[in-house]
Length: 212
Image (cartoon, rainbow, N blue to C red; front, side, top):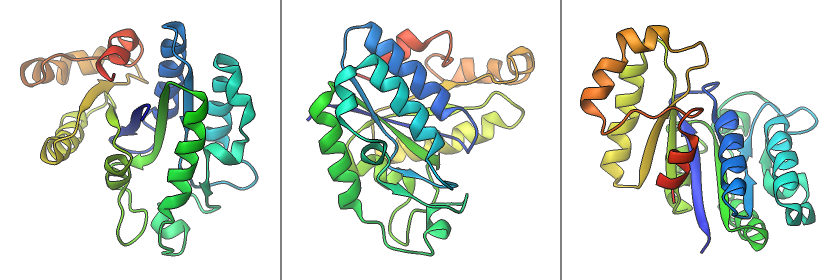
């Protein structure tokens, strides 16, 4: 089995796609053949925009990935911009579609990045949450957190879950609005309770090493 990395976040619009693109570039720079899939994307009217961005970049970094089509890397899409449970009208997840997409993508890569939808407890159907999908595919997990007020609570809730399931994971922060307030009101705490505080932009090389 190829190395798999599942990118999730403490909520939606935290920076999963941004982080995934940074990782793709970093692994390619280190000589790996990179691959990507986004198993489920909602809010898709015509084309899956997040998956399209990831696919376009991956094809530039790994020309062999051009053997695939956009549908191959985003096997499940829904029109409604909501949790898959709602967007699918409670349809059961066909996990085989995702397994087949992974198997096909791994024909052309050494490292496969798998971008989740929303956060760990986004419901997919009555059985699966997003964290269940990450565990099903046996991937290392990168948790991306925000740097705004409330990030301590959001990060610790997700950390507790990841600790409880006993998976290999790394936490990184994405300072979309800058780090001034984070440095003052949140960083002192994280320095005390985390082994190290990593940021997706400036620490991407270290993050990429820790995930493999």
